[in-house]
Image (cartoon, rainbow, N blue to C red; front, side, top):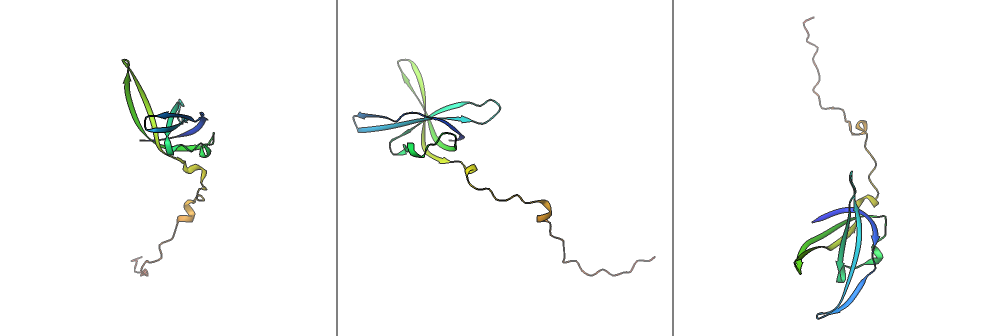
Amino acid sequence: MEIKGRLVKVLPVQTGQGRNGEWKKQEFVIELEGTYPRKVCISAWGDKVNAGSLVEGTMLNVFFDVESREFNGKWYTNLTAWKVEAAGENQQAPPPVSPMDAYQPYTDMPPMKDDLPF
């Protein structure tokens, strides 16, 4: 899945030791645009963690997976990012084109004969 929003908060990196070795997790919050803005917390694990590239206030495209799991009769849902990139608005947009710039007159008309009856 993909989501686009403005980065509003970068949470501290969490690290730990598991049975498969050391792990690292970075959580961040983005705000979705719309009439009623919503905030979403997304996690990035392992080599996907790059806290230096997360600058609050920038627009991001986040590609993520959704997973729910049960623990002691309650369900918990995680959004795990597998790719985070800056949204295209930070790039320079092409200059706007006016309708008159796009207008090209038709020049391949055959010559007209003046054979009107009046």
